[in-house]
Image (cartoon, rainbow, N blue to C red; front, side, top):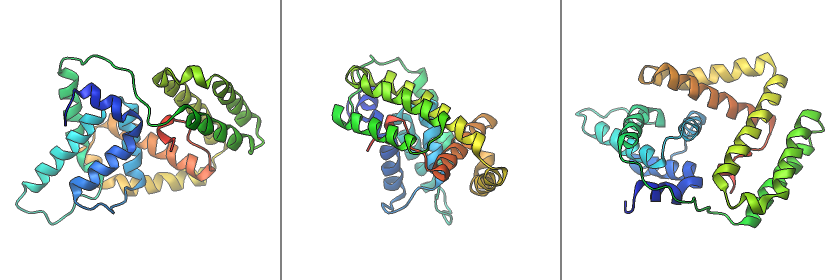
Length: 231
């Protein structure tokens, strides 16, 4: 991989999910392998924790190198959760290295695609005819009106959209039934059980939050506001 770690991060910043998915599939040797809801929640947890994409990719490689060095490889690596400790190790190594010069992030989308994304989410929220979602839609509409200015500082825009998404999640959480929450927690426990002893309490807490948030948004049919979901 050529260039500095910062160059790599800048070029791939908004392709975080895709880059991790493709790298894991390549390392596993199965391009058609589909990531689970737990895997997507884990990627989001890494992104939100500020773990550089390069650290995640290196961690995946390191985990698979360790797996391939084993004399017995009866069980396949079927989840990104297997790579958790290796990713954390790589992130710590990168954090201890000399910081690279910060460069502006290049977006893989143009201004019109950004405006379409924001507009679509405003319309989606307004279909719900709920005062709480209308408040989120109004804030999003204001951002849309100032999109040309925000396009010049996408990292700041991402921070605003993430905060707005958290508000939306809080609204949806208040409307979620106890049965739905219990069902989501049971599904999480089933998927996470094989990997619990590989994670710290802090990692588990972060992953559980991301998983339950994603499940909640999916079940409520709510849009993702983050630029990482701009396709």
